[in-house]
Amino acid sequence: MTIGWPMIVAAMLALSGCATTWSRVATSDADFNLDNRACQHMNTQTVPVSSVLARDYVAVYGYKRCMIEEGYTEGGIWKGYSGWRNE
Image (cartoon, rainbow, N blue to C red; front, side):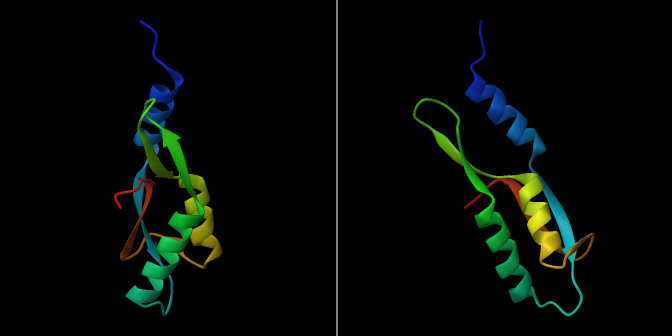
């Protein structure tokens, strides 16, 4: 039995998706939500899961780099998501 590369990629991406908490001084919930969604959007890739199914995946490293560039540090009150998008 041979496992196709899309299944291997999907499994690797599913395992690497995670939630990270973020903090930034003098930032409101609304500001965080805008920055979080923008970083997710800029780092979204479509991954084929099968011949007829594709899922949107947020690249972990790109997302984290984007949040850090926006001035956030890891560890805080806001939870940002990278990995499979739930939208």
